[in-house]
Image (cartoon, rainbow, N blue to C red; front, side, top):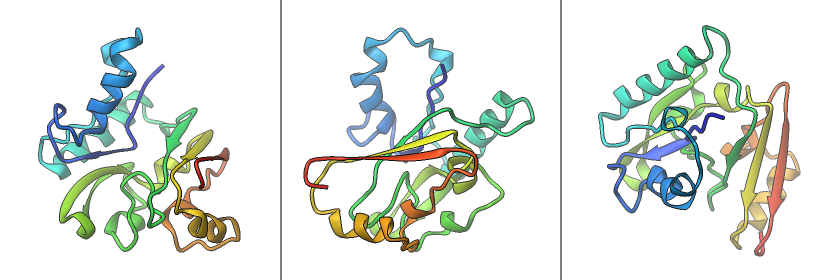
Length: 168
């Protein structure tokens, strides 16, 4: 088992905003997953360098082939973003990298994120959407509106499952 991160905020791993910190406290501290099998994005470093490092590590682990996740768990934001693929950001158009640094004007900050080539290479993608207020976006996505970043997650040789709850 390898655990990867679809995105990370550019903060140290101890920060309250760190995705890694949340995963460590809720999962890794309680599960016998070898440390080498947890691929942390280094949000505390230069975003472009951290993204390039993660990209290179995924390629190394794929031994020159395509890194293909068995399962990717994603959420969906109020604006239809997923991972750190936000509407109107440069990462949406990236086709030659697996992981990139993405400047998000909404937060005036960089984030590190998987790109569509990596997400769409997965065998299975599962969206977990449980907060209320996202019904209108979900209705549009399910009706074929591809203007939201989450709608472009369509694994070529895989499946997408949406788990909805809590008013979503």
